[in-house]
Amino acid sequence: MRITSGSNITIGLFFKEGGDTKGLVLRTDNGPQFIANVFVKACEELGIVHERIPVRTPNMNAHIESFHAILEEECYSHNEFESFIDVYAAVSQYMEYHNERRRHGSLGYKAPSQFHEAFLRNNAKGIAIVA
Image (cartoon, rainbow, N blue to C red):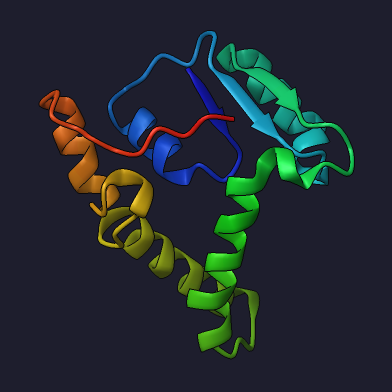
């Protein structure tokens, strides 16, 4: 299974179902959080293959860049934050909305939780995305 950084929906549902991480491929950019020793060690311990996109190629993670634009437009721009705790609370609330209730065009205009249920029933129809 191949997932990318920012795929919070996929990652969350994967672990929620008790997925085995051995052989999982996680593609990320080269941000400091992804080159940190703690992250590298966690990937090794979980058997996750960490794949990095080449430096200065955000187009190779276009869907993640798109997600960050959505997060900016639908969450950050609607709030004024006075502390990290405020940001954390707002983003956590937004992520719950994004992952559970917000309709996604790539999932046939279903919320991720609805798509996941349909997938488990072998009745999921989304849009094929080819990289």
